[in-house]
Length: 308
Image (tube, rainbow, N blue to C red; front, side, top):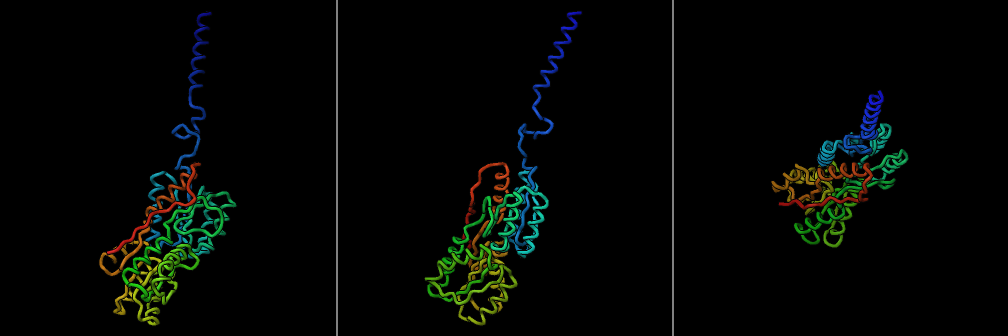
């Protein structure tokens, strides 16, 4: 009887030992045995300035592809180039309780309040392609727009020559992209070309067309044009071709339509920003930050001049 009791005691001890070897909290931890969240647990909101522009469509697709690769949940919202709508969209994302908000601002000044709202809700923010004039941002992912503007200016100068009359089509007033591309272009133009006309067309193709028509009427001797993005450049090109004039146009973004126009010899050049890479890098940086990894405050994406 004593032997039987001893056997039962030994069996009980073995069962208890086996239980104690099971990973603690195994029912609630992730499959890797760690206690941290998986990328699939992260909810990331992405407010895009507009999905009516091929550049930002490609940028958001890059972010979506990287989110799928990493297993994160990404919600993309379209601000439709409206700063007020973007502010409302960001508030909605805050109410949804997302873990991170990526913002591609319509207007760098106007978006500051939305960034500050996210800060108050303890939701980290990453800015993409365009910066915010206020609030705390974990990281800013973009090309160097000043360098890109200089690259465009130097290319235009090489084609029109010293002291040529040129025009500049500006992007959305208040956006960092418009401000910085214009700064870079004028760094080159101020000592080498005469900027006879400078007018906003809000990064829009149809406005680029109408603005260019007005510029041609007032300045018939224009030899070249720099547009802050390809949509405006392509609109300006339509106006120029309709006028029968031979005017050199350089754009910015290297969208598919612009790249084809360069290949066809219609557009003199465009600055490639690589939007897919910007979107991928933004999403990747968001996940790294949420995992507690250190990320750089500014992450540049290289530029390239596309020409014939």
